[in-house]
Amino acid sequence: MNSLQRYFLEISYKGTAYHGWQIQPNALAVQEVVNTALKTFFREEIETLGCGRTDTGVHATQFYLHFDSKDKFGSADKTIRGLNSILPSDIAVKNIYEVGPNAHARFDATLRSYEYHIHFQKDPFKTDKSWLLRDKLDVNAMNEAAKIIMEYDDFGAFCKANADNFTNQCKVTKSKWEIKEDGIIYHISANRFLRNMVRAIVGTLVAVGKGKIDSETMHQIIKSQNRSAAGASVPACGLYLTEVQYPYINIING
Image 1 (cartoon, rainbow, N blue to C red):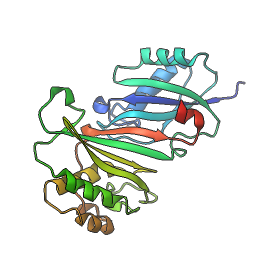
Image 2: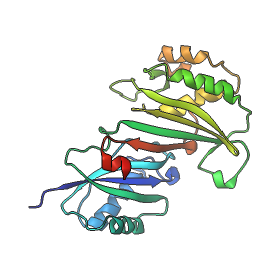
Image 3: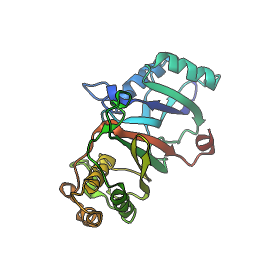
Image 4: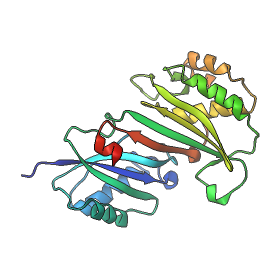
């Protein structure tokens, strides 16, 4: 009987057609499609575990999952090409790594980064990939409020109700808006995120940008630990998981 080899698979996907990463009972998820491709390629039943969840319509430019296989693959390039030939055009395999038997795509991640994209003029090439917002925003005020987020570590005010988290504690190490020629992008990094956290934060920062609340109100919102005190969640189409870091040299450096 062959011992199992654990692999990390790095993928990217456009989430528009999927109900998030995790398998759903009555809807198509990215995980289901990836599992089917791995089963076809390796000719065995494969179960995957992802680095986290993404909601319906959310994208990922970098996402890691792990799985175990009875056999070692030969060429990484051949495996990547083979899997990509099976997968649909909106899911791509970028890398595959052999890792130790206890390596864990979810629990071993030390940092995750997201981006949220907003554009202000109708653009057919941004449909389902960015949020079209026609309001003028005070980005300077939004950045002042964004800085305040890094002063706190309890984000219950931005957590989806009944999310069943064991803790609302997160260490945010980046929170800022970037102005681009065709829109703005919010960048946020942390050791972990709560369900719906980024979309709720962006919604609150947009409320600041519209002048509905001032930037200093962010202190009160976070301290309240009350979801109803924060802004509405923004659409999923503008959200991207962009980076996941691990303490393994071969994962970080490829």
